[in-house]
Length: 223
Image (cartoon, rainbow, N blue to C red; front, side, top):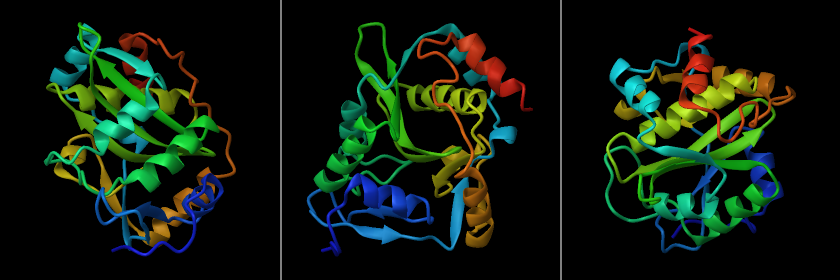
């Protein structure tokens, strides 16, 4: 079982993120957690985010209704489901972590992006932590083709519009490489992190109901 050095409070989480650490659990059933401090870190450069044309068309189509912070707990629950997924580890989110991040959300330091289909069912989304001008992407899920990708596009458009300088993905996967994700050494990551922390950034630089065209326009301005 993973070690549990002390209660995972919002204050402890923010202190850890500000130093380059993040928590994980060995399994969804393990009440403990451990700190991760990778020697190489995944980031998604906001000035080099690539949106494939096919995906851009899907974003513009509005096939998914995208909402912001409308169901943070639901997104976390979906990300924690044990169903195997090729783009994420679905076993590391336990009750301890869910409770801690839910508290962070209530305090305004954690946010979610949700995609809903025509029936009003949430079919994709992601969540992460905001600190200064850094956003730490934690996990995403998808129950419909491209739903998590559309959520990611909306996230990046929002981060660019809000003046963020760092999007931390923790690790680099094939799923993220198509958008321009790269891996950097720890020292380089910490330099980016420490530059971002004292800066001001607004997660609501775009309105919660910002139209897809505005989201894509925000991204294109950095290309």
